[in-house]
Image 1 (spheres, rainbow, N blue to C red):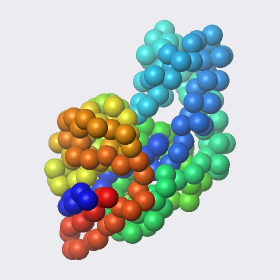
Image 2 (image 1 turned 180 degrees about the vertical axis):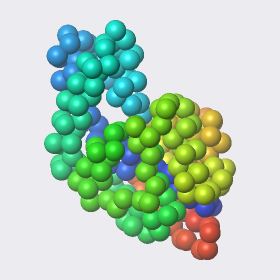
Image 3 (image 1 turned 90 degrees about the horizontal axis):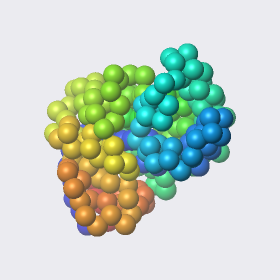
Length: 217
């Protein structure tokens, strides 16, 4: 049993709170097909990264107008698929135990996609959400997590992050935020990762004053 204590919880969204990889990959597969790209190469860039950053990496000569059009197509595809998305097991019970001002979502997804996925998965929306359009630099920059901590008025070092992507792990490490990896078979912990879980089943939370106590089996 791992015992942790913090003042706020910061969650990534995709495959941390909701099981959204199939819908993300379907949308980007369509993009790859439209442009004659190898989807397997595109797939490696997807976890934890904003759409605009992925486009800049795979098609750096794309104009701003072309990029905006592609991002709109991808966004509409992801929103259409959101109603079929399921929560990570245990995520609904865990998030509903938390006061809305004691946790945040920090995601590479656009705000409309985040809202659709939380709704589709039946999860509550916290008081603080940091989305793709809210930051200058996406993950692996720590900007999003630091912004979330700031909005919650909590020192980042007193937060606990939940992430599944390498870009997210790097961001949390740079922000000096202890991290629970959503990676069931992780055996080597690097940076600020303190433990790993496959889902939230069996995780218990107790809110006492300005502290949150977490027990992870």
